[in-house]
Image 1 (cartoon, rainbow, N blue to C red):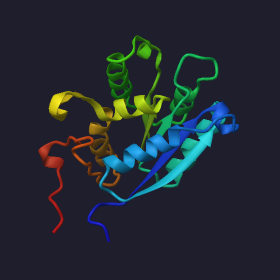
Image 2 (cartoon, rainbow, N blue to C red; image 1 turned 45 degrees about the horizontal axis):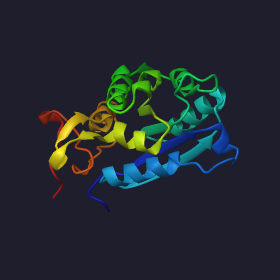
Image 3 (cartoon, rainbow, N blue to C red; image 1 turned 120 degrees about the vertical axis):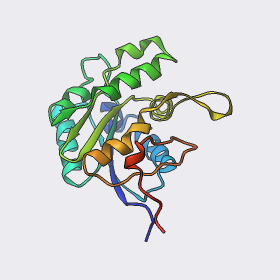
Length: 197
């Protein structure tokens, strides 16, 4: 029995070509690798590789929430191209929008590329689940989740994942604990759980 709460996480890669077998999907492995490194909790992943179809994306998100995923992260389909519909599909099934996540992701990405202003990532809450649209490239996934570190691993800009555990606390999900060397979760002192004996 782990001293950490188990968590179920949905990971979704949205890509017409990868879903059709035209090339190997890199989104799902990148999400799984980073989350496994970042979290101390035992994780059960629910993975989906789906095409850029609004109805298919919305249905997958609803299915993952209904399956008990406290967190659902998507990658791909957030640009301005006609087939990029992940944000619309996400907003369509939302109970609440969490605009700070998208704002911070764009701020982080702007440190690297001026085209970050073209990204349309959103985050929402549906029932007791947090759903976050991440960028499509593995490098950008890590940067937005982890933030920017300077010399000696000093945090220069916080990644969005620093706020994820407390958000999940607030909506009634499991207590997520992170490896500080990857991403230090922030909680108000009153929300920090004492270590289990």
